[in-house]
Image (cartoon, rainbow, N blue to C red; front, top):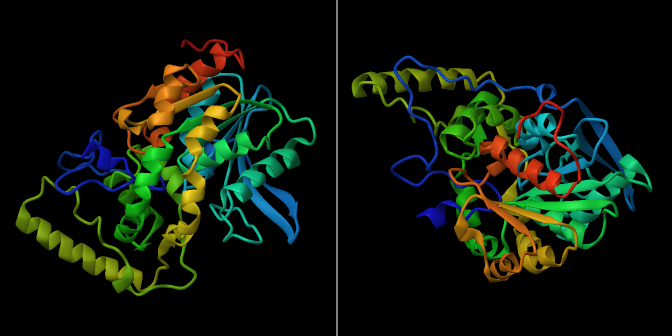
Length: 376
């Protein structure tokens, strides 16, 4: 079962039937109400800007979120279907630990990035995007850069490093993506994507679903990052098309009869609201990116091992390692750390642990220093 819970490498798999995923703390006492209202990006990043990049067909515009003005750059790449906002809480934590700059970018066809050819999500094109954004930001002499990627973003980070698109590369950190596990997961991806709600009646409803389904186990991170995963539908949808899949999930303390009556009343209210409100849907149709999945992950372990820069691999479970990485770890070719009790979105579920691991790695390699007054 543990292996099944971690198969999905694009977006986190919902809980298995019969209960929440390990590590979820979803049981609520009587009368307690959780806050699923969205949080602004400005609470975690200092600035937001759009970076223009020239290509053959015109200009692509990449949305980035930044913090800091000195020290090495942490270039953060999100997973498939997510956005730069998935790094928000982590950014607030790491920025308080070490001297650094943070640049989190919305990848091609994700978040608020706008490109001329959003259908091209090949590893080669996305890796070139990273190099172009770095050049647009810093010119021919970029500062030292540590590239950090989660899931699909981890694969793109490896391709970017291997192709030498970042000449000032300090190091490489890959979070919860391994070739063997990823390739195994591809067969079940479409079934998973079909199992997700297609629409939500509000952003709050989407945030609530992400937490209660186990996609993101950290409610604070869900409140800031889900806005990057979903968008308002261009046209209003009738209430029959809106998912009510999360209604009543954790009302465990209620009497069954009262719960049934409450659900009926809530569904009626939802239907009335839907007649006058727009609904939210996913920004990225991941099912349509299937032809690129194999290109992201095939040969990833060998590419990772051949990158000359110091490397850190952070995993949610020990079952992730394939043969090449097992041998490489025994040979000391990279540093690895397992962070248990996390879902696939490790940096969202446990931003403190990921920040601690990364800060320790960077200080050990003398890439930066702990901030004055920070007790590690």
